[in-house]
Image 1 (tube, rainbow, N blue to C red):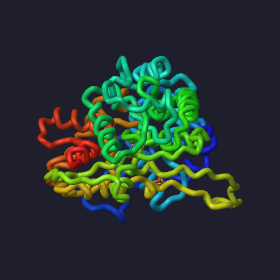
Image 2: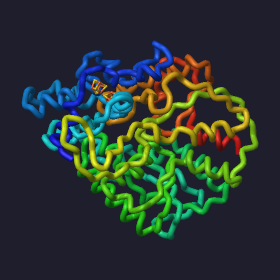
Image 3: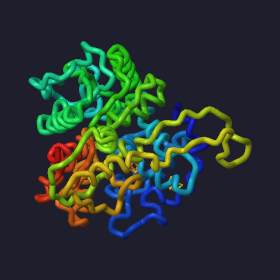
Image 4: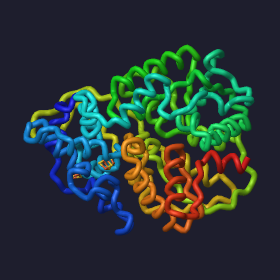
Length: 420
Ligand code: SF4
Ligand code: SF4
């Protein structure tokens, strides 16, 4: 798609500002009613979902010209997708897609941010988004099957953040421990693993994402992979949704580790026996939740007339088909764990702040967004915030540290491991 292909979508915006909030019908309170970190932080309409698509409309009609202010608006957005979900509660047109496409256009036109250029250059050169020397070092001594040498039905894909962030290696080790306990025959790619490319896509570098996806698909096919299991929400969304959109998934099943654990628990292959006495609140990662629902290919025609009527009807991704229950079911299966929900959950969850390249391009905005979520988590009275993505855990851990809080931060796999 090109930006001009979204002309009709962006013209549909009626400037109602619903995209800034949890829809009126779903709102639970005034305090945690906003969904868009960008408008909440920068407080100017152009920084909202609607503002951005109004800007695209103006750009397409040549009413405004690209400048440095445009760059600031384009990159100070986590591409979390909350705007599109709230808008699409009542409206049928695309919001996140044209916003993402504007970023692609900025990259094509050379209107980039140095921090993101560096990150993507590192991915191209070293196959990673996160600096480090030896990708598979976390698995040294674990004697795991190497999928780059042996055929593997089930591949545990580690991801850059978990592989290279020493403080987050524990998530891979916990996942491996759980899979071994359930006697799952699985492999890892170890040092041969490379970045999924999903975050490069979010940053606007489509060609680099596609090149990365092709390399990965070739590796998966060679290894005979039938199912990919990952503990990273960004990798999950890349493999399941983006690879599918670009016809590069190769028919491989993609599961988040919480979905896989949920299956193991429900089939009786895994039992959690030890008590983990803890009151937790669960944070839905954007790319496991609202952006984690299946991509549906559509081919058809728009019916004549001023409205969005398609033959066959076009399927909108409204965020409701994301992975919401498996993580909650896994938490409920851990003896001693009690869940207290935040106001903004599931498709209306507030972002952790790390997405869309914001962690790299504007760390201060990223940290502010995480601190807002920590404040909401604390308001529930929970002792810990639990997520299912290393990028969330990294951002939340830092936010708690920066604000001098005492809230504990975990990934679900850490709690499951404690209960084995
Ligand atoms: S994008 Fe949707 S929700 Fe936002 S102002 Fe436009 S019509 Fe309203
Ligand atoms: S993608 Fe997220 S941060 Fe960007 S405009 Fe939409 S709600 Fe705001």
